[in-house]
Image 1: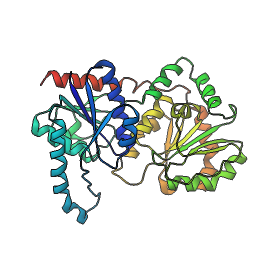
Image 2: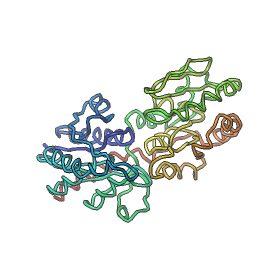
Image 3: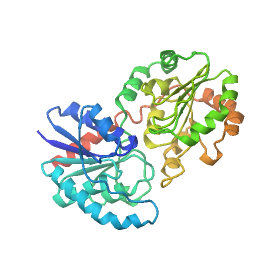
Image 4: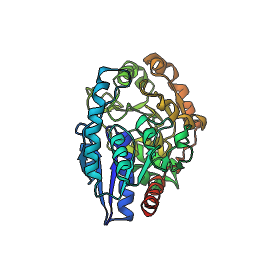
Length: 359
């Protein structure tokens, strides 16, 4: 029996791919022990146990994006996190990292102990943790081609999909048009009315929510249906006619399938799930970070399945003026999804098996 440790917490963008790989590994090696590393305030502490896996915590290493006095605390935090990671990795056979704050100290601990490490980079522009980790292991995988020397020889696997999204693609692939109508019915919307699905990431988006509120009367007057995921931390607006606001969408696969237009952030996970099941998107990249969200959607834009718009340009007036144009583009897009990421988790499992065997 082997022990497999996965590191990737903080946001759903790190957690969901890690969970997909954990499930794929358990499917091939049901006898192995699978443990996640996280920090005390990350989303992993609710999402991962709910999926049936164990989370072990290490101290968080918080690195501000801009120069700050908090940088003075980083060496002490890093030392503490590496020490805690070494204890967790002591009896492990493989570390699989997905980036984020929790990954950097585990990469360093694995390098010190000589533990085989696989790294998966979800974004088109890697974060600092995975750039560091990629210098320490030959076993690197990417969801999309990455223009960076650390990832020159990386294995192109695609993005590991959530189990419900992967299952929905398999069930829909023979008749995507029929699957889209069926999903709209299951969600309780008029199958003949265009459906707009709005989401601002796993926590929602105050900026997007504000502009949607301003455009709502005009959108409803056009006979549109709207499913709006506002985020659990944000106030829940009042439902009105065909406007259905929710804190969080549980039936995410149905939401992707049913929607004629998706308005969303372009995180790596969102882009891959949309690519598998969605039809047309208006992506409004998060204006902070290292610009990865603009790059994540570039292939979807090139395939004429999406448009990109800066947050500063996304206003109620813009949406009212361009909604007909967006729906026309959606109608012209092919109804089928894409199998590009369908086997990504299995490819990462295979890379991990090779890393163990080569030890």
